[in-house]
Image 1 (cartoon, rainbow, N blue to C red):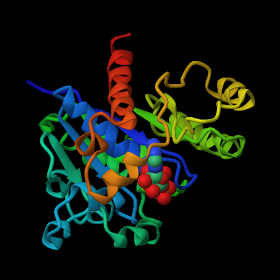
Image 2: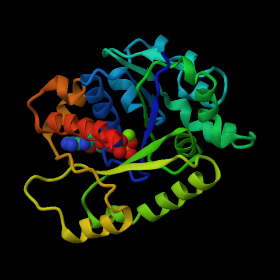
Image 3: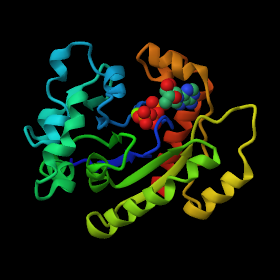
Length: 261
Ligand SMILES: Nc1ncnc2c1ncn2[C@@H]1O[C@H](COP(=O)(O)OP(=O)(O)OP(=O)(O)O)[C@@H](O)[C@H]1O
Ligand SMILES: [Mg+2]
């Protein structure tokens, strides 16, 4: 039977807001609900690849760089991760050169979408989660063009609001010109300090921009997250009692229940 695969990009051009942490831990949490998940690492920093990929450099030879420069097809770029029900399209530093290499190609905005489209009926994933780089580059545009929806991790500070209008501008252009089914899954408030209340001005502004497209689940700043990254594991496998572990499970639950609405 053919699986319907939902593609979700984790996007915010602001650095360090928890994109990679969310991509990994949401993907992992979905596997706890028996979902099969593919992660695509589209960041040349390759943090995610380092966490779930294999140490062996050999397995990193085919990455999202080869995929976006059309040297390989989608299936060829997939490798197993060290976790069950979780596969990976890895990244490496070469990805930084993609922008220049594909700049003059016709259809450069939809290379990823086209490569998925060719094999969509062969894919047995419930979800494809894309970890975007901290920029609104051609690579990010490829992610948006290929996605059904986006999750926007955001830190609860008024400074984080300033980038949203640019992000929404790009979102609207892609939706209008390339991918009319693109939707906002939700804004995810991350790295919340347990000792301070989220500022009302921040919440008001978020509601103004995103209405009810804000996840009820928030992710708190939690030292177990940093520890789990040191150990190269999802936080749940490092300490399942940790607050962030439960919160990422809640996020997966919320995502799954949104789909039933
Ligand atoms: N809930 C959390 N609790 C504690 N630390 C966190 C949490 N979420 C993220 N971090 C830490 O914050 C840093 C940035 O997180 P992450 O790499 O996920 O952000 P990013 O948005 O992917 O960054 P970049 O834009 O550079 O790709 C990392 O060191 C990560 O360990
Ligand atoms: Mg990242």
